[in-house]
Amino acid sequence: MQADFCAAAASYDEAAVLAKEVSLRMTAKLEFIRLAPARVADIGCATGDGIRALQARYPQTLPLAIDYAPAMLAEVKRRVPMIDRLRRRAPRCIAGDVRELPLMSGTLGLAWSNLMLHWLDDPLPALRELHRVLETGGLLMFSALGPDTLKELRAAGATTLRRFHDMHDFGDMLLAAGFADPVMEMERITFAYAGPRGLLRDQRRLGVRDGLFGALGFREGRRVFRAWEAQRRDGRLPATFEIVYGHAWKAEPKETADGRSIVRFRK
Image 1 (spheres, rainbow, N blue to C red):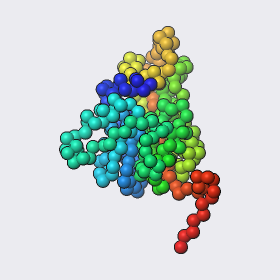
Image 2 (cartoon, rainbow, N blue to C red):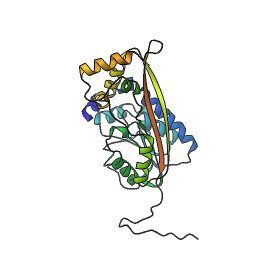
Image 3 (cartoon, rainbow, N blue to C red):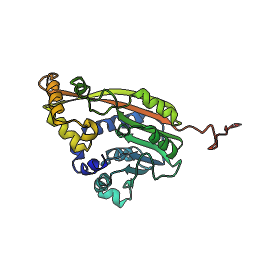
Image 4 (cartoon, helix red, strand yellow):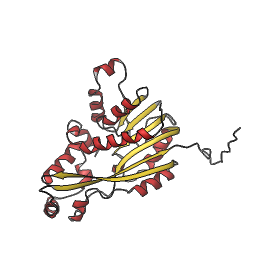
C-alpha cells in the first residue's frame, strides 16, 4: 500500500474531499480544548493539510509533518509559501512509521492523525507509540474510518471490503495504551456519485483503492455495483463513510518502567 500512496501524491488533493472536511471538523474541536503545545505533529500527514491548519492555530509551535511516504513529504515541502520559508516556519518533514516514530519520548504536546489509523490491522502498537512520544499532559487527537464505511456496498454483497474498528474498540485500545480520559464520537458523511467509476477513481487518486476494496475482482465488482444501482437516490449513488473521532490525554505515570508504583506527595 505504501507504493500506491507514494504514486498518489500528485493526485491526492483532487480527491481528498473527505480528509479535508474531517480535518476542518477536528480543528473545530480544538476550540474547546485548552492547549498550548510547544511541538505538534501531524502523523500520516499526506500533503500537509492538517499541519498547515495546526500551524494556523498554534503559530508559536514547532510543526512536524510525519509520513511514511516520501512523495507525500515532498508535496508538503512544495506547498510551503515562500514567506514561511523565509521566516523559517516551514514544517519539519520526517519520514517515519507511526508504529516506530523517530522521535524522543515525551517530546510532543499534540499528536494529530487524520484518517490514517484505520489502515493498520492492529492500531494498538501505534497508539502505544503515540503515547510514548507525547509529553505528560499532552493530547492525542485522531480520526479513523468506522465499520459502517461504504455500508451501501456491503449491503450490495461486497465481501472483500476492508473491515474497520468501531469507536468502542478504539476507546478500549486508548486505555490499553495508557491514555487517560478518552473521548470518542462518531458521525456519518455521505457522498453522492453519478456512478461506480467516480468512487473507484477517487480511491485510486488517494492511493487507497486496493487497501479499501481488497481483492475485488472484475466479476464480483460487476455484481456488487449492479446491486448498488438499486440504491440510487435522486439519480445518484450514496456512499457513506463512518468517521470515528477520538482524543485522550497522557496522564502522569502511575508506575515506573520496572513496574513499581509511584506515590506522589503534594503540599
